[in-house]
Every structure is written in structure tokens, then in C-alpha cells.
Image 1: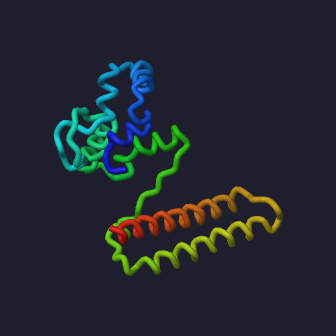
Image 2: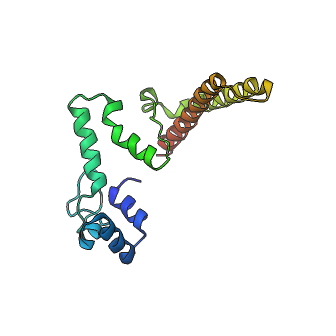
Image 3: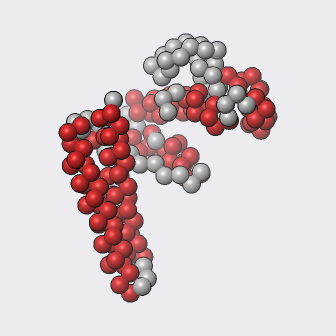
Length: 167
């Protein structure tokens, strides 16, 4: 999703003024302010190709906050703490795309898919090793969790690379 106002609109429902009004009441802002958060901003900028009558919304503010932390030299892990908080609060999982992948050429897709298959095999092996005694110990869980995260990262990396290749 490219534009924050589209995320806000999807969250509340397309042109659903009654829900937006109820949301506004619950978060203690005016209905018109909340509605403006679901519209394209007045000025076109780097984050929006559309022009409209909308206002910057809380997502835009959070983006500016994180970008300011990064510009001021805060470590990426620290700067992204608000996102981790939101993920934990809503039982979500986010995975960073490894730096070396962001510029991976499309011809490397096959190699990335092979890494996905290898990591999937590592997950199966870790599970099989753990289940020899029909239970998973805490130490085995640590190994299994690491393998699952590595496989998840590889699959998301593959998806990211595929999207980049499709552009």
C-alpha cells in the first residue's frame, strides 16, 4: 500500500462516514478531521500521486518520527521501536528485508527460491529432531524458532524480489 490515506480509508471502510464518525468519537478528534485522514492530501508530495482535500494523518506522523530518528543517527532497531510496539500490541509479525536483498538483480530469483527450499528443509529437520522423544524442549524450541524465522525471512525476501522483478 503506497499511500497512508489509503490505509486509513481501508481501515475504516470505503466512504463509510458513520464508521469514521464513530472512530473519531472514540479517539476524541472531530469527524471532519478523521474523514480528512482518509482522503488524498491537498499537496502532492513524494508519498502521494493524488491531489485532494485530505490532511496528513497519524501514519504520516509516525513515518516522519521514525525517519527523523534515523536521520539523527538512532540505530534502525531503536528507530523502529514504535512499529515493534504496534506489532506486539496487535499480535502481528514484521520482518526486515535484509539490506543485501534490496538491490538483488531479478536473475537471482532462482537462487533466492533455492534458499527458501533449503530453509524449509531446515525447519522440517529441526522439528523432526525435536520430536524424537515426542515433545519439544525449551532448547529445541529455540532452534526450531530460529529455523522458522530464517525460513520466513527467506520467503518474504523471495516475495520482495519477485515484486521488484515484476516492475
